[in-house]
Length: 143
Image (cartoon, rainbow, N blue to C red; front, side, top):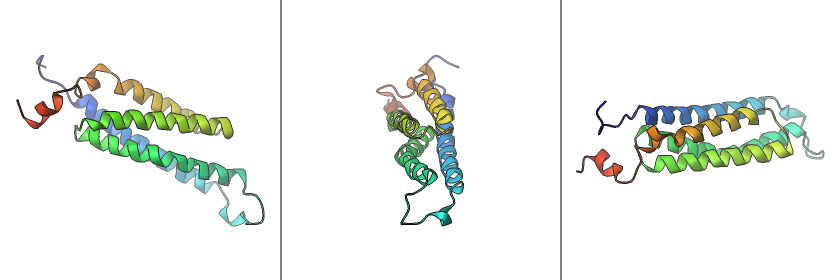
């Protein structure tokens, strides 16, 4: 690889990893909702713990949307993808920590680990060099 050429492989890889994270979170939410017996819920009684956990899992919706947008931005090499990904990972960690303090569900551990690894990967040199200031003009072909 020439010194002035930049490899976009790490950026595309992180885009795919972000989309994979969204698929995992959606799949986890669907799995959690299948564990609840929805027919046993009555309006006169307090909702069971599982229903409350599924409702709290809806807090992952905003980070999941941001993660999907950032993943697509990474795949299309848009600069705003990095900031969206960083915000989405921070929100995912915040939701995980909040859910852990209230319910201590087991699924927060892999989500937290994945988010931390994604933050570290976002801040790697190979990814940051593609999004440095002035790089967008090069991507559009403007000298």
